[in-house]
Length: 377
Image (cartoon, rainbow, N blue to C red; front, side, top):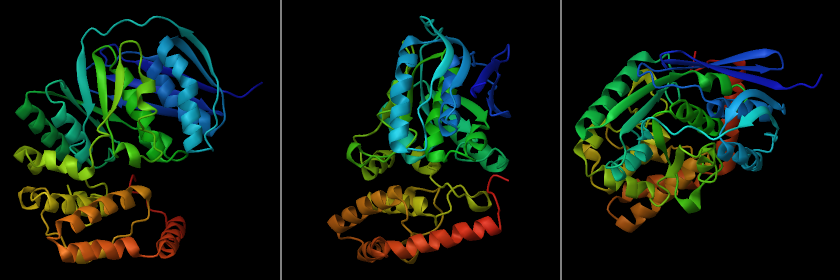
């Protein structure tokens, strides 16, 4: 009997709970979604998005049952081709058992943005605030569900932002990251994960914005990408990859015009000891440099330490994202001429030999294998 990945979806009667079960070679993987808002509806598109990468990484045809949007179904081959181009280990597979039917329009026409209070999502929201009706905060994506205190702090902040702008907040909790990540790097998994959430909300939303991380000419392969995101759309729900026109510094400049944004901005992904922004990691330091350049660092109260050039000089710029942002900041520092010590520090980090960084990274990975300790414990 030919091996396939079986998938099914169930949504509670009140729309507050959704569960996707994937049978991968006899191993059951359960993905859960929760929301107090009760807006979930059964969606074969959400099931497809959640099952796609597990099927591709295991090279298994995906057997599902349900009705699906013709537009969505016709895009699945192209979506898979792009993922395979980005990561050849992801093999294109067949979707079996689906029936294409015309989809029912949403009962509401809300417009949402996936919102984390970070630079990219803040920029998209502020730019499109007249159109956007809902800020969608997903727990368990960049902050693990176990970090309850930090999640509650972020929730409080997002509600404060929404109230100030007269918008709604939609909070959703999911474990999809912990299900995908053992086999699929989150840099690829987070795009389909967002899309699965979006399609669960398709009875109430007509458009969803996913904030871009880079400009058009600096884009790196990732699960959320301007070539991929629009392809997840249906006849009645549009996904838009937004913000390609702006540099990081241009985004920070817009954010700096809003005092509330500077009081709530969150960029840290390490969050040691539950810190909102640690002021030490690469992402915090790159943002602090940007805020310094636009004259807003002292007003941004979510960074409670001074920008230390010695920390900047010690940055290990090992990945493409980090180097792109560092080069943007370095060019801006050179053009400004106002912060020579900071400019020299960033130059030191950029000129550090790549072989040293990769050797250090390899040694850390080896140490982690010998002495495992998961942040998501």
